Length: 180
Image (cartoon, rainbow, N blue to C red; front, side):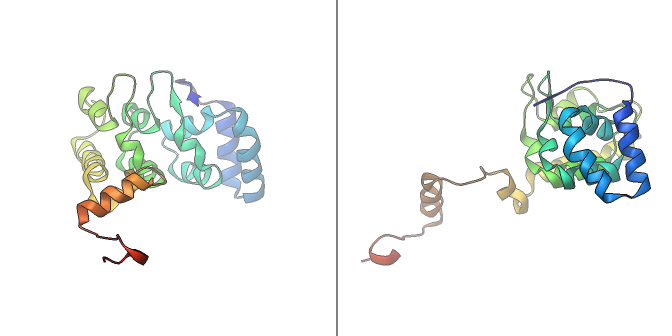
């Protein structure tokens, strides 16, 4: 699914912000489930406008929005890092908590978000402290062995399980998994 790289805040995002501010969960959920299906750019704009609580709310009702990419193959994490005025560590963390695999997805230039950020200098607007926090989060998600299972295919196939057993030295042959 593709998102547009637009600069202005669309009226639909303004209306969504209004619903969120009013705290009417039923109307907010309805708007997200119906209207955002027609205008997926609103999620992108919420991320780019650094509306953290709104992004969390959208993802709670429509988690599939985390999967959108633009015409350059940038996922939402690439775009958040490209956001010169408003990128921050907390938004990066929100996105990665919802989909850790974002960190390993490559754009059409074959760059992961971390590589993309490094190549394009993250942002001249961000403070060094904020850039350092973002880099720590990105590297943590990229290398953290505890979260490693988040990067594996959603359903491991038999060959993968057999390979794991072989690597771990699990001899599960014989009757009922015992060795004869």
